[in-house]
Image 1 (cartoon, helix red, strand yellow):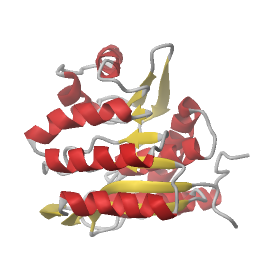
Image 2 (cartoon, rainbow, N blue to C red):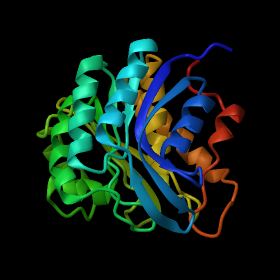
Image 3 (spheres, rainbow, N blue to C red):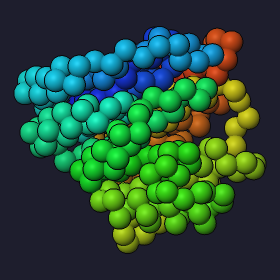
Length: 269
């Protein structure tokens, strides 16, 4: 089967395979597309936490992007962990050079166990790279940092999303998984419309890599020609099924089951 699209993933590596580049590759591949990577950092981590982060030199990250795009042009970019302001500068320069229009940014700031993955100076620069994005997919803690406001309910999520639009993004998807309750409300918003994706909260400790996987799924659907709102809907469905069918690996927050798409309609019909 020929891949439906080509996705370049710019993100950090997860040695345990549940999040980061590894989760991104699994997601893109399971949805029938071709994954390429530019690794921004190498982490030593497992389901219990992150034990070390070794950053890749910013110019090497830029070179990975440029060399890849020159040979195999991506249909979309997924940008994840960018751990320093220098990395963000080099990534922005490379992305502008490649002139890719479909860009999904997952503003990764904190690991599942609470380990910080980005420094304060980088957060300011991250707000600038948002301007070149098609979609930004923060969770509630990340949206609070980027918007500068506390989020306690769905109304707050909508208000925060509007603040993030002012940073320059075309579309915002704030993920509601951190909110307490029996339902998960994910808020999609742009200048002309908003949509709340409502789903039953899945009670599971095995949710490692959900944010990475969701943004990569959205990037894949978007690259294959789906509208951005529909891509969000399909990406959320994919991740929910992957959580429901998790494999229960590890002693901590285990990974989701990225192969679940082989047992589902992928959403391209």
